[in-house]
Amino acid sequence: MQNIYNFSAGPAMLPQEVMQQAQEEFTDWQNHGTSVMEVSHRGKPFIEVAEQAEADLRELLGISCNYTVLFMHGGGRGQFSAVPLNISKPNGLSEHLVTGQWSVSAEAEAQKYMKTHIVATQCIIDGKTTVPTQKDWKISENADYFHYCSNETVDGIEIDWVPKSESGNVPIVADMSSNILSKPINIDDFGIIYAGAQKNIGPSGLSVVVVRNDLIGLARQETPSILNYELQAKSGSMYNTPPTFSWYLAGLVFKWLKQQGGLASIAKVNQEKSELLYKQIDKTGFYQNSVANEYRSKMNVTFQLNNDALNAEFLKQAEQSGLVALKGHRAVGGMRASIYNAMPIEGVKALVSFMQEFERKNG
Figure 1 (tube, rainbow, N blue to C red):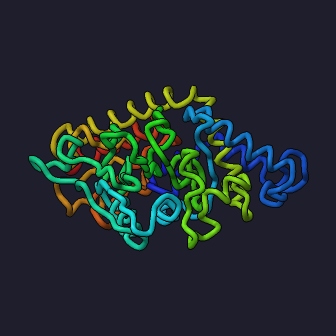
Figure 2 (figure 1 turned 135 degrees about the vertical axis):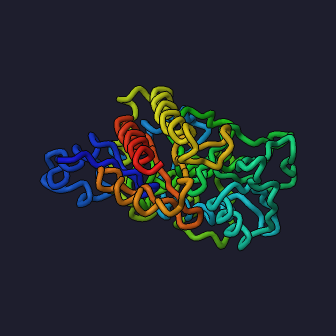
Figure 3 (figure 1 turned 180 degrees about the vertical axis):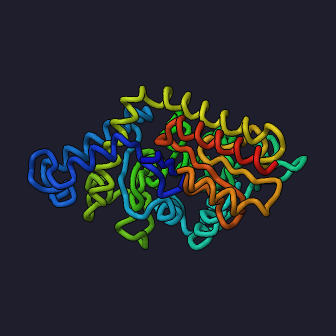
């Protein structure tokens, strides 16, 4: 059987070992004679799953007791509303760095609840998309929070530095949906990080939120209970029935990451994968990437063929070769190879080999 490498941006591939374990346990989990989907979320067996998943996530990310971990509904987009409702005043101000489709959407959603201000946007310099650094803008000390997306899935832009206010008192909120757990980070730099699960954590529908404890208990009266951080924290993320199967699978992924050596080890693999692919893109000019080198995403590698007329044939032949879901987002076109943690380096090597052969025949 031909190896299939799934480069989908999300929902994305999960580690093969995790999928195999889930398959083996699907109808008889822990000798209960039922699936994990069929047991009570308030029963001892599932509580143990939930507690272990949180403990493993805390270990992987180095999350201290100053932060609360929440497993919530609604994916990353649900947090576009949850963040302003939980930590801002009705007449407050949120500030935003806009670098792509997802940070655009987060700012637009925040407008429903408060005043917003965009401090800077992505820009084109010498034909390459880049991000203005903080020497060109600053965060207002009057802001209730500052929001940015650390990795733009659609545009293939990743920011490796963390914005800060001069005083350090403005909470920094990061949408890490597409690069969480891909490398070590310093949690203490943030007030809140959140991530939809469907890229580096597990199935879609689940979101993981890490929120500093002093930002809990500030929710507005109109905040829906399902989005209220305080209610979710007090109930152990079980104010209502949680997405139990997604939570279980996330826990398996956390265990798998620990088996790989943790985030420092997986970061080295991710660096190697992205370098292989970008090296091929830059090699001859047959392929092109329009993002400045220092902002090229290690998770979502976007590229274009120098002849758009070849796009359809590239995608057709790639799929025939077992390389699927390479079509770029409709907003930007071209190609996109999403190479999250679960993508083995063999998949990237297979893509590079295909790109070389396609260029040989069509260049």
